[in-house]
Image 1 (tube, rainbow, N blue to C red):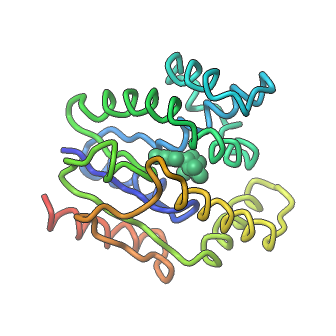
Image 2 (image 1 turned 90 degrees about the vertical axis):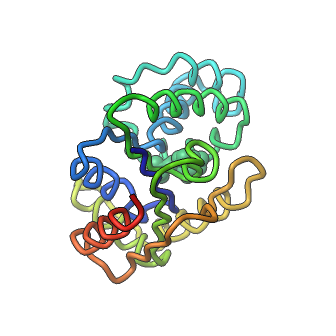
Length: 205
Ligand code: C5P
């Protein structure tokens, strides 16, 4: 079984993906971490604008690096949005993701192009959305929880800029697959979003 979850930044798809994977006994891959990992490697080498170096990092990516807490930083997220435009990087990471999805007993992948490009034959596809204001509020709460200073207006502006970049890029832009079910979590807490997602998946598989 393969479950594809796509949606914009801070829509809650990562948390949802983890819980859905546990519920159905599947493996989970937060694919944003792959782009964050490539970005962080390039930032360390001061080569964020080098697509070929990014592709090389993507091909040789050590899965253990995906657990690095630095990947959760805003810098890694902003860098990810830049390297995710490079076709060579997307191609190298496509292979990583397809390999992951094909291994038993199946998997939940969350990202931007899982239902459209990576796993077009997924058994269930969810497109998770929430208003930009609500996503900024959640991201601010998360950062405050980690003891970071937070400027909510700046977070909102960053989310809007990232939405625009993710939706307007030529290669694998963020959009719902034709056969995806959209789940709006603006008014739902994490438990209600999880219950709604399980109801959708149970209906589809
Ligand atoms: O989901 P997350 O915020 O970790 O993703 C970081 C960035 O990686 C996104 O803004 C997007 O540009 C890129 N990304 C992507 N395709 C995916 C997952 C993430 O282009 N499947």
